Image 1: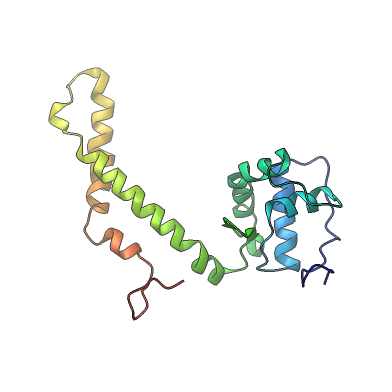
Image 2: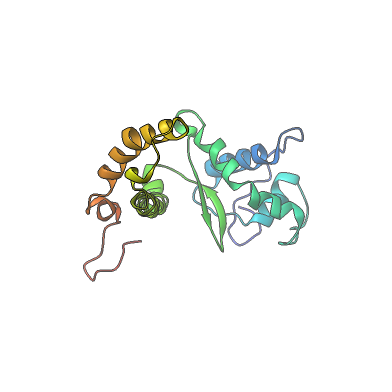
Length: 182
């Protein structure tokens, strides 16, 4: 453990100067996942660790902002890892981020968020499709391909996901008092 209130000593992490920021952050997340599983790291702390700085950079620094802007790229790198190294990025608005540490971790932290987003996307898809009346679209060569796409691809998907229980099935389980389990 390091001197910092029970934080593991991750000083053995070696920064590779010729890799992109995304790769460097992903490599650090994988290292931290192995040596400090489940531990969140603030964005300034990640910048400090990947650059071997002696002090934390300011939260409003360009480097810290760059880490924040590259989260989706870091997540893609983590998801593309093979076998047991495959994981995802778990973010928290106050605590920072960490790599997931197994199936139960992903289920408890990420699946809920993804399910809610899918429910929102389903609602937007259905509402947008409801604005389209295929009878109003001209039968011209210009629209032929789009009409066929709408008829053959969009309509079957809209029918399948507009079932009344689709979004309900995505809701996380509730406690006995009716509140959402965390």
